[in-house]
Amino acid sequence: MKAAVIVFPGSNCDRDMKVAIEQSMGHSPAMVWHADTDLPETDLIAIPGGFSYGDYLRCGAIAGNSPIMREVVKKAKVGTPILAVCNGFQVATETGMLPGALLRNANQKFICKDVDLKVAANNERFVGAFETGQTVRFPVAHHDGNFFTDDETLARLEGEGLIAFKYSDEDGNVTDTTNINGSRNNIAGIYNEAGNILGLMPHPERLISDQLGGTDGKTFFDNLINSLS
Amino acid sequence: MKARVTISLKNGVLDPQGKAIEHALHGLGFEGVNEVRQGKIIELDLGDISTDAAPAEVEKMCTQLLANTVIENYTVELLD
Image (cartoon, rainbow over all chains, first blue to last red; front, side):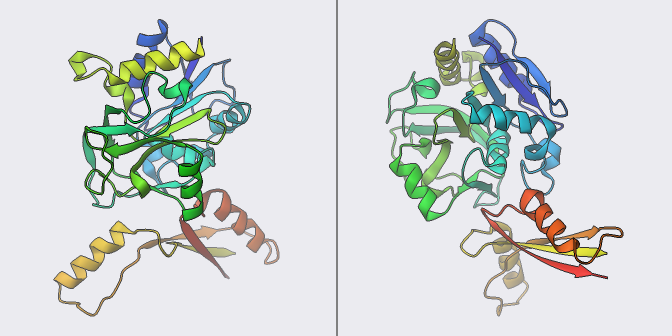
């Protein structure tokens, strides 16, 4: 099992991602610089959180056009599993690997706290450790996490079981009150149609030990690494 | 040849920054403002590109990078 973490200028969760993968996999992932044009052989690509290129133009827009992302998009098309977290999710939508876009939070605030998420649709590879309908707790830390897509795409995401996580309360109730950032249908994370890409705003890599306040992230990464090994 | 690209959010896409500006204007007494939408302007100096080639070139820049057509509209003005 091999993994690679993409690093952009302005990434700030790349090392958290490395530690989380390392803890579950037993050895380090390759750290791949944005200007590289070759990806090492890998079974998992992680696009981490942060503020790539200072969020200039639009969040993820410039990173989405960086040299390494051309290779990542090629790998995505042949089915390589990709985990895109926070800014990584924004980058993935900018490249068209995932539908929709992430807008400024509806309340204009940077939101930094642990949130409850309902596992909305299962995908063994990514969330096999959880039951559909159960809740998990991951932290969010974003200013632009307000998921937007048109009505047609939204209906397709709902209809085809491509919504991974929804902002909920701890009992799994998905309401306007639990919608922290104005995302359509409380969407916190989605899969692509082929199911090999998961993009999500919350950070599973930030809750991987009791010392950090919880282990739902460790459960997530243990399952992900196991399913790809 | 220079070009000016104006980018704005599509109708129906929530614009929290526009909303905040609208509230601030109301706070200053500009009660007549019904809605504010915020966008951006990008100015390009295209050197000595021909007038014939410029529109297609800027169009490509818009679709590949400058605008996200999932949420944004853009217009291009060519300036001498």
